[in-house]
Length: 563
Ligand code: C2E
Ligand code: MG
Ligand code: MG
Image 1 (cartoon, rainbow, N blue to C red):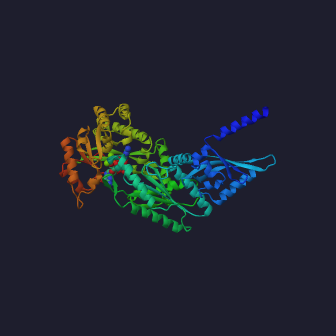
Image 2 (cartoon, rainbow, N blue to C red):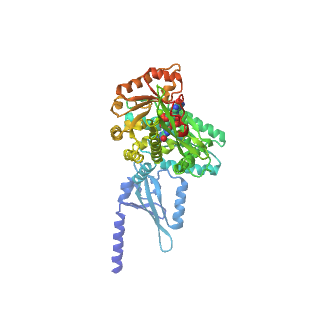
Image 3 (cartoon, rainbow, N blue to C red):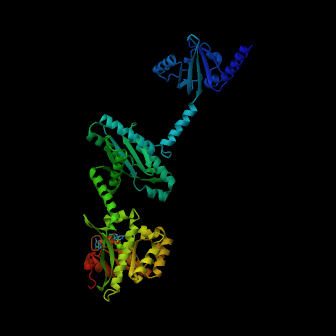
């Protein structure tokens, strides 16, 4: 009685299991189907009567190799079960992927009675996994490999090269002037260009190569399986580079706008002995910058001299941080002269007295200083030195009316506390503020015009004067100019240089002078080197000059007040 109840229970459980959503297929010892459940019919499309007495082989998609089944049966025979993914074919011919568990049923003596297969369709699961993979490793805009996949592939490529003694090539591609397109036509148009660029890049390489979007308008290509000869690898990489330049030549149609785009390409080779993937990445990047410096739309191979230059720059940057404390900066003074010959003041120009490299000009370190907050400390140092000098001049009758111009970097001027800093320094040294002139470049004023006007007004209220440096090289928009509370325009030396040369069109110089006059502000010409330039300027009503014709920038001991 008790036994019967147990048997009935087990039968009920077995029946319930049999009704599960997973397909169940049971074969006899000869592997011929004796039972299938409802879920089997749903997944495979075969009815019970279609399959009874047949081999499960009728589900086979033909996609799996014989060796796959051999290994499967070996495992079943040895361990009594098997688990894995397998693609099968539905009755209607559709191929699907299933996860299958097979177990053997044996009697007490170990004789095989049945095989039970349980499986479910994982096609959608697999698709979702593929989609997740796509999202994680591919750039959604262009469909190219993303940075993550690029790094992974590069790591692999390094390993393979090291193992096989081969070389690969890495190309770093940056679009020229992409920012201008984005800023003027909008991001949607920018995106259209990036998509088309991606297609063109892919058309330039083989299937085994990787084209990745590194970010923004930067793309990276890994070329693999190249020649075993070093010089041939270089050639192969160059050929791809040239192909890319050629592929960019055709116009791009972005919506209805026809656009031309050129790339700058940096190339480096790698053999797998690099410290990490950063090394070839950095080298290709450095070479790309070199291509830009050489005028864009170019290919440039990395070489060790580039690395030496970069290292030197990094070294200089480090040293720059201690230059202030070590008191290595100097101010040089270049006189500013009236047409009467009278010296009205000077411009303070910074120099770095480097302990090993000698006297360095601002071109070698100001940009580096601007990369960090250092430019603020330098600016403050210059302002303080200038005030000390002005105080000194104030105390003597022959110099008390001299003005001193200082250059202030955009980054410093934009600081919220700039006005306060200047006011404090002027108070501390108690100089006459109207002897101090601040030179700034126009682009920075225009970027944030309202704020610039406020700052300039606050400082002008205590007497500080303002001059626009390098005038004519930026926007030079008249509408902006009229709004700025200025005292002086300084015509850039690039215009002065051409005076007296053929062909010289003096219109720009004359226009700037005319503009300044109509706005009621002073105009000064910088970079005056010849008497002919001075005469031209004077004839055109510019009465203030600065340049080698009068004096080079010199240390204060050599600065001569009387002309
Ligand atoms: P800038 O303010 O336009 O200075 C004029 C530059 O022209 C100076 O170069 C000066 O030496 C040079 N120069 C003067 N007369 C002539 C000439 O007749 N012919 C030629 N070819 N050049 C002449 P420098 O001293 O090398 O300064 C270069 C730039 O560095 C300056 O251009 C300025 O923008 C920046 N700079 C200089 N000192 C400072 C500073 O203290 N702070 C900041 N933030 N920038 C500075
Ligand atoms: Mg200047
Ligand atoms: Mg200038």
